[in-house]
Length: 261
Ligand code: F6R
Image 1: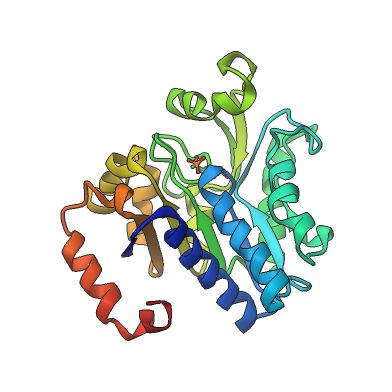
Image 2 (image 1 turned 90 degrees about the vertical axis):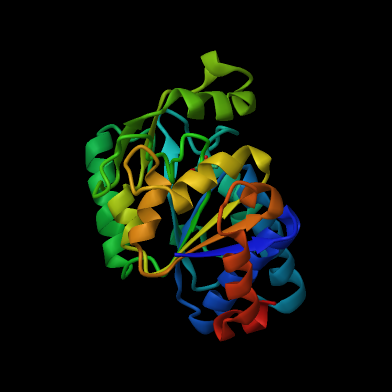
């Protein structure tokens, strides 16, 4: 795992967008794993900007989102399909047929999850997976105690997640209690993982995920097992990390990061 600290959340999101853009420029048929949530909005804003100003093309890109709420139709303004259409898909030249989210309204949710795994496999697997982190330590909706080998399935949301996302729904009572999510094992199969976390409210959980033990209680910690996982944070989210100076040294000195400095 690598950890990169940027001065603020805008710089952190721009770095993530530049990594995604380089992936797409190197492979026009890239398969991207995408995340939703407020942290990702700035990343998609930068990608839309790059599409408009520097001809970044999504014409052949395929995407698979991490998760979707159970029971929310695509047109529901709180569905993740709606979020993706609004923040990215309708603003770039991607073909909607090439964009995939699990269907939280499927009649047979188990079959939908198994089919989602097959669709990812048929696309050749995920080249680059974007991730946020929840206050429960989740990636996707892999709440505490999710098996580190889990695949796409239905999960009950943790109280911390319900509290975190309830404001978007106008209160906890109106929020779905379940979601379909790629499993931790599905995520770890991606060829590269990039996790973005910004703001002081993420400082504790980032320290646990990056410098703590690998545990199903904090599923983001499973990224420590991944051969190519990069965690990008702003100063606020980095505040509780013990080895900050070492991480800064890596970013400033390693040739791999030269083009991004
Ligand atoms: C959303 C997802 C979640 C979020 C996480 C952080 O698709 O997979 O894991 O990335 O809950 O959400 P924000 O960015 O709103 O703090």
